Amino acid sequence: MSAEHASEQAEVARRAMGLDVFVTRRIPQPGLDRVRAGVARMEVNPHDRVLTRPELLAGVRGRDGVLSLLTDRIDAEVMDAAGPRCRVFANYAVGFNNVDVAEATRRGVLVTHTPGVLTETTADMAWALLFAAARRIAEGDRYTRAGRFEGWGPMLLLGQDVSGKTLAIVGAGRIGAAVAQRSRGFSMRVLYVDVRANEALERDLGARRVALDEALREADLVSLHVSLEDSTRHLIGARELALMKSTAVLVNTSRGPVVDEAALVEALRSGRIAGAGLDVYEDEPRLAPGLAALENVVLCPHTASATTETRTLMAIMAADNLLSALRGGRPPNLVNPEAVPPRPHA
Ligand code: DGY
Figure 1 (cartoon, rainbow, N blue to C red):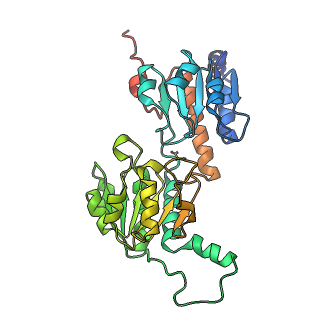
Figure 2: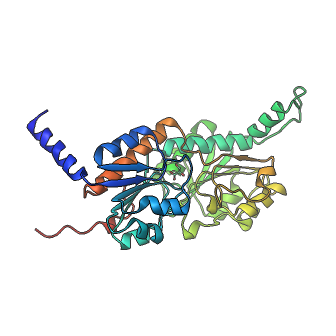
């Protein structure tokens, strides 16, 4: 080991002295190992479940940093419980609607997330749901397992074609664009809805930016990729569902509250739309009454990023964000740069 490297290591170790962090639930080991190596003390939620509110409040108490999950509501109460030493909440998710970012910023507490590493995996899942719903895969699986398959039938489980159809992407950021790019093999017409133009989609796919109502009226397949904000809560409600084709399929891998789930149940039950594929729910882990009883919806338990590779990358990214903030740096995936104190003038 060179003298320079040794002194760097010593510096890291010195800074790590006394650093105390809490991880609100076990994440893949490479992430935990990374955190462990950079701090004096790391405590991980010992249960394989979401912490109760009192457990979360007790767990964060007096920590220098917290590695949190999208299932933890990180608000003023949690920040009060963590106390003035707490410099960062490193969220293990690209979405950070579970964190009161404005409150964190006001207190000079950093918030980080894990963008990029889950884009392709989530886009794959959106397509899996899209196909499953359009081609009635889950329904066919249930039918076959139940011993109801009595041989090929000309009218058995007819679904909707995907190839050659119109795909609407609502929210053409990283994940939405990756979903759109995957349409290449299926000769689709692509529409997208976004406040910003996405030149790559227009150039590569001939995609057209349209208003939400037009997308819903024209699309055969609609995939949602907006982040959850006040402006996107119930973006798809009864009015919007009524605009869709009766043969259309809706896919949601973004956040549950983007869709009015009760209105969706009604639209699926009445045949207003043909089907849906959902990975997220308005009030997770609860489902809207009637949703689970419907045949024309495919339901997944918020697993769009759930591959070993992706969850490991997310763990490493969250760990690096946490450690960077604890060492006084500017973490690479900072949500609230305004919370970083300005450097004093030399
Ligand atoms: C996220 O990261 O926001 C997903 O919902 C879970 O990986």
